[in-house]
Length: 289
Image (cartoon, rainbow, N blue to C red; front, side, top):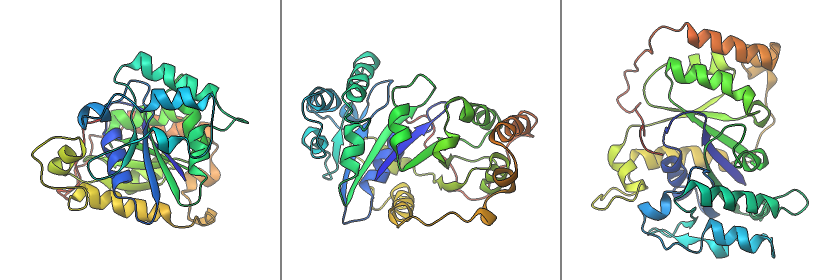
């Protein structure tokens, strides 16, 4: 299974959530996290990993031997054992590595897609902030599931409604992750015609641990953030079911995509200020990528 984690605006915590999801994926599974954020990687710096192996060495090797096992030989383990293919910190080097990785595709399939087809294998791709020019778009198009993180605020939802069509994410049937307080999940799902899979809970200590900060005792298994990631991972790991058209939002079933996007943008442009939730756990990884 290949899962792409991304955003369309700002830094709502894509990397931190990617680490949490990979670290808390239910066993047995062969899991790997791959940094594909064109703006540059941060995992190697956060967790003090060596500069190689990683995304650059994987891209170079894929030109010669793009096998399903190749990805695992270019991963480094985090302290808990999670294999990570880390990207270099600079945007130029990371973009070059991503382009090389995509140029090495065999029969139109990347080494990430190949690795994810092995039975029991799960590849989490941290795709960062997507736009129409991002080299990570090709990886997102190959994914079995696209997780789109967004803060449920009027300005970000307006940007999201307009941006979905621009980057062709509608065709990928993304699942929305709401990060932080704001509009209720049911209202966001109804207006955008997109399922809200989960809300990211407030857990500053857990987020710090997942960001590699020393001195934090709360590991992923004990943190609220880790527990939320485990719940979502357990759902994603279940065999897929055929979608029930009668259960889909009316906007999805009866309105064309172009009208839905335009309507969504108008809705959020005229929206009143976000309504705060009473649940103290409904906050965010805001400011973390």
